[in-house]
Amino acid sequence: MGRLHVTKDFWIGALRTEGPAFAAAVSEAPPETPVLSCPGWTVSDLAHHLARAYVWTRTVLAPGTTSRPERHDPEPPTGLTPAEWYFREYDQLVAAFEAVDPEAPAWNFAPQPKKAGFWPRRMALETAVHRWDAQLAIGAGEPVEAKLAADGVSEVLDTWLPAGRRIHSGQWHGVVQLAATDAAQEWYLRLRGDGVALLDTATILDHDDHRARVQVTGTASDLLLALMGRISFDALGVAGDRQLLDGLRVGV
Image (cartoon, rainbow, N blue to C red):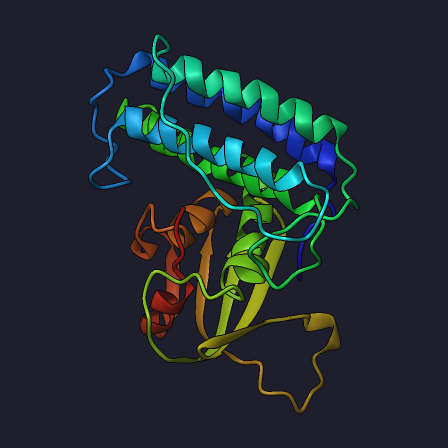
């Protein structure tokens, strides 16, 4: 099974949940609190990173073209706490998403149509994973909502991996099966050295070699967090060749 059918409104709704939860965790933590899931980062670094990601996204959407704009990451404004700067950029991002036509031209980094609808999905998932990071820093991590997390698994497979954004370099060959126990969703992915192919099981023929060399089972949130390098695949149910899983890890 492939990507769930979701819309811009779904991703904006996710942002409206995840954004304030992220800001609340950042506000609760002392600024220099380490973010254990992002080694070397503090909670302030995390807030600044996400605020800059929002600024960059609006920069990409503004021209209404598929050309990649030059990126300039702003410095944190004086007089604002990390949470205050984050919330300012968050409000502007949500407003931009509400106004944009998902079919409008806009650059993205993936081998996908260059349309604005790419970015509400990307920022909703970026925010959800970093909300988990921020909550982990204060010992209060909550899982990513199942439907959003399942869409995040799909995003790793249809966007991050085809764009060549693995954490590890290497050559992997074989089929991986991922199954989300709380989302009635499963994915088959064929690893082909540097390349990947997301398989549609409805079109696989009897003579196709689609037998999985490794199967991974868990909640959609845990699958997403493992793919994003936040938790170990050991926290999920794994059967088969675990080495293939190194070829699935990406990160934000």
